[in-house]
Amino acid sequence: MAYTLPSYLSRENVGPWETYLEQVERVAPHLDKALVPWIETLRRPKRSLIVDVPIKLDSGEVAHFEGYRVHHNLSRGPGKGGIRFHPEVTLSEVMALAAWMTIKNAVVQVPYGGAKGGIRVDPKRLSLAELERLTRRYTSEINILLGPDRDIPAPDVNTNEQVMAWIMDTYSMNQGRTATGVVTGKPLSLGGSLGRRDATGRGVFVTAREAARRIGLPIEGARIAVQGFGNVGEAAARIFAEHGAKVVALQDESGSLQCDSGIDLAGLRAHCAQAGGFGGFAGAEAIPAEAFWRVPCDFLVPAAVENQITEANAGALRARIVVEGANGPTTPAADLILQERGVMVVPDVVANAGGVTVSYFEWVQDISSFFWSEAEINQRLDRIMAEAFNGIWEVAQARSLTLRTAAFVVGCSRVLEARALRGLYP
Image 1 (cartoon, rainbow, N blue to C red):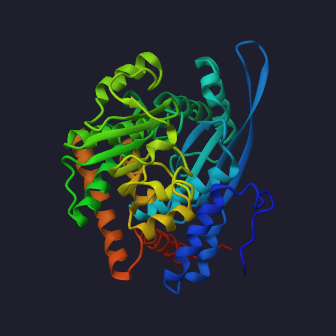
Image 2 (image 1 turned 45 degrees about the vertical axis):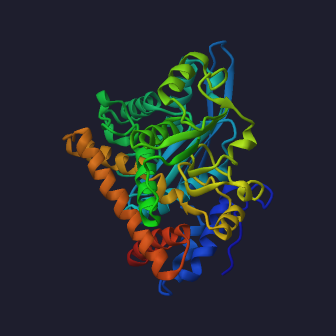
């Protein structure tokens, strides 16, 4: 049966969900024939919840915000995926992000399904008290889906440890017991894990290192360009620099910087803490946003939001390896251009899986009430990420596939095998 879009989406507003669907279509011919009859399960989220989130502002006015929580597929375990607060959050975006979580969790072999959530809001326009009220009301609205063995949120764009603490506390109050395992990415004092904050960026570095090893590209002295200077981009840039690489270009919503001798990351962090952004930083040259994509580099790390590398700029990229720190940063059309140009792309479903891997560690630690050292966390993360990349590389080489298609072959096969073995009930 041919796939049709859900009634609440149209070809005009389908957005990131269509990107995901196209990725599924591309992988379908490479799946085991016994699994193909189940592929429709990948094209349909298990459930999508849209909620109204009313809060009282500090002014006394009542404001309404739209929130979402999507479970894409739970065949391999409870839902796992972050919550983002952003003015451009849409249902299509959250559906796609949940689906990518399904594939990602399967690729790195953590026992989760895919979920994602978000609120359409600009959190910078809210006070801390308003943000807390928004978080707690949203948690209460999606409470019917949450639980340590049902759906475990985590931080994402514009959410952090404090937001996770509010979610954990709200859920716990509703349950009448403390449930630390209902979220990950929490403060250490509430059952958080050492190493979680840098985990996604560290995973980006590990997969980049493994990719570079395959083509004989040394990390020491390599030129790095990173889009995004939040938790993922900053950590990835810092860890690359710790291993002898030079971060020659950075971009975030406040501007774009270039310095061929390497940007002083510590100095830039201090500047941003005072100035609120890149503007006025004396340690690098400010460049136009579009020029960032043309900076010659060995590794380009898009670590912001989706749809950044497009048909319009893919031909201008001067990178040897693209390592996707963000979810869905490369459109399908851009993927084909990069493939034709011989640019290796380490796809998001493995490159940025370090965050969910250490989230899994945190969840396990919360359940067992036994916590590991940061060295143990980083060692386990490195092993899992390297093994996941190596498995994908072997599939890609054996079957002459891109790394993205190989990753989807591995991830989709694991999800569909679980779906087929479980069967249908009733």
